[in-house]
Amino acid sequence: MSQQREFVSAGRTTIITVSGIDTGIDYVLVHGIGMGHRYWSDFAEALGRTGRVFALDLPGFGDAPEPEEPLDMAASGDLIAEIVESEGLRNPVLVGHSMGTEIVVEAAARHPESAHRVVLIAPTVNPRERTAAKQALRMLQDVSMSKPKVMVLGVMYYVKAGPRWYIKKLGTMLEHHVEETLPKVKAPVLVMRGRTDTIVPDYWAREVTRLVPDGRYVELDGHGHEAMITGGVQIAKLVAEHAGAELPDEDDIVAAPPLTLIGRARIWAADYLYAGSRQVLSLLRRRPPARYLKGDRHKPVIVLLPGVYETWVFMAPIADRLSKAGYRVNVVYGMKHNRRPIVDTSRMLQRALERVHVPSAGRIIVAHSKSGLIGKHLMSEADLGVRGMVTLCTPFAGSKLATYTVGKTLREFGPTNGTITALAGETSVNERITSLSPSFDPHIPGGSALDGARNIPLLGAGHFLTLASEEAADSVLAEVERIADRQS
Image 1 (spheres, rainbow, N blue to C red):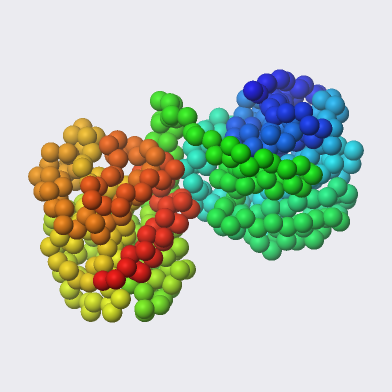
Image 2 (cartoon, helix red, strand yellow):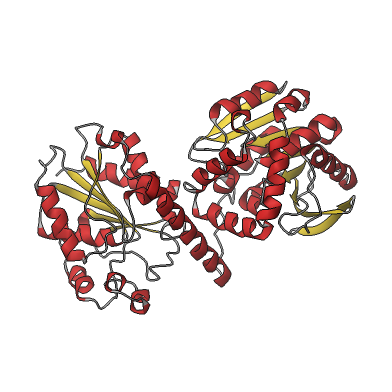
């Protein structure tokens, strides 16, 4: 059970959320720019099994009221030391994420008694990219690959903080030279970086580790900048170990509560934010990278089919994963934004594939949304060396929301539409299809299950956000390899 209280210093209010058990180890969680205590969620809950957790909302962020001017990093470090002393914390472990790492470093360097141990998750700011424009670009790149939970929390917090306050605080981040303070930190330091983090490059995280007198570096597979959100229990175990505690193994997995109306609305918003970012990126990335055409010729060729109003860029995170695994990825041109009727597009695709020699290892279709229906129609009419198909968020039984839309393109997905019902009756190819379904798809309330197919539920949520998740990429790759290994 958590408790919330205020800490006021020099007219500025910090909100402290306290949870966990009293074991003699106290953790202080310092969030990144624009964020607040809620984004620690699973991480804080797991860490609370080994000690008390003090998750902060710094002045102007989360639930804390906005002061007239932001504190710089040194003054923010002093604030953390004040809180440690005021709360009477024992063996304090200061845990900072992103901007929070700069604050934690200042606290530990200026007030050594306030830091028994230090943890820096995704430490900023890389000196080679210390400009607002570069940081904004890196953040956009990271958001484009984020998992649904990260997107939902990010949208909620950034809207709450507002652009004016965010820009003010960003200025204090960029003015701070953390590399000058790191050598003054005497406490043992654990530095962690997600392997896919675009904001914190590998060389800089390793340099941070080298600069502190007593540092250890851990790189986290399958995680990006927001590693403690996407890998809460895993990261908590590493932090607890660094603090000299041990996280119990039992109850590691806690069932997520049902989504509230507000929760669903947040996913809708984050879903469209992600889709918008992909549309903008599509203007800059007209053609897929040449490496997509290279790979192991003993493996099937991947035929990539994006959904309606989408370009290949929407599926780039999945295509990248398949390409790195040695698969050749073919992007089909001429679909434009996939607005033609399902049957027409299927036959157009058939003609395109007929003009190309069938690879010796065959083909596997990887499709999103509407294109899963296109792929199923193609498989039921022609062979063309297609060994199977993996789909994400495909309305095999239609979507009841389609009846409320305007225009033929989306109304075609109505549950009683002739194409939808005809495809539902065609079951001969279902056993060669894998359908991946998110826990909540705003566009397909009835889900994406297909009778006779291999149906795999995903923990993440979102119709478009699913395409960005590591979970989806891992699942697609696993299913592609299963189909590739299966005898033709």
